[in-house]
Amino acid sequence: MARAKRMRLRRVILYAVRSVLPKPQQTESVRYLLHYNCLPPPIFLFLISIMQLAVYIYYAVSTGVGLSATKPFPTDSPFILNPHKKCEIWRYVTYMFIHIGYVHLATNLVVQFLLGIPLELVHKFWRIGLIYVLGVISGALLFFVFDKNSNIYLAGASGGVYTLLSAHIANVIINWSEMELNWVRASVLSIFVGADVGMAIYERFFQGANKAPSPVATIGGVYFLNEQILEASISVWYQKVAKMLGYLMVPNTSGSF
Image (tube, rainbow, N blue to C red; front, side):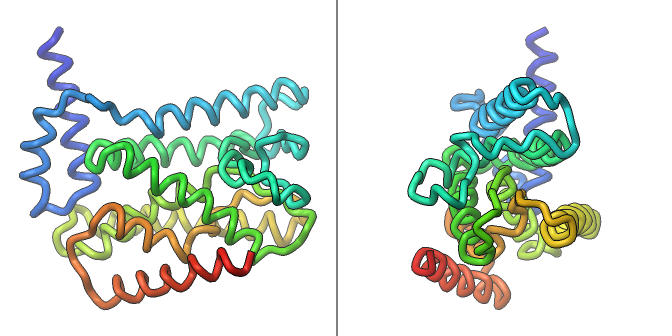
């Protein structure tokens, strides 16, 4: 039984390393992680996901709408980012627990488990937790800068989820020649991001919805945050441009708000 558990753990570790790191960095990381005893465990995104699921179920039951692809939409929740209560600063983080429908929730949970857990194994939970929360906060700030409609409420964990996506996208681009299945990775990520952004734009501008899942809120500053905290090893011209845009975006966001 113990041997079977060790073998399962090794398979998880190998998946995590191969999904996150380029080939030249895999050997050393595998050697280190094979002695990994899950202390501390990759627990941040697991706990966040459980809380998000619990909050969704609570509002689905308490509002009486049940499971729905587009509901509940609890505008009176103390967690949602309310445009009329900008001074309640906890909402800049807690809006990540509110999801508008099970499709919105399921999409974020899939990314958090499939991409976030491997990142936690390789880069430690505190780094991933930090960029996740910073992505959520920057999503709220950029939302108020670029969408000044006072009737729009912000909900969802897309700000944090897109930090995880951008970590993988940046990793694939920067280490393109060393990444396994680089075209497959790039295609899957591009399709997912394109579909998510397209759906958000449609809901926001063509359905007249007064809610926003915030899928593009962190595009300006997230790349900078990932590269500084995850310590990418290769510096090329497009990485420098992205960092410069990040430096410009983050201060402008704070100042404009």
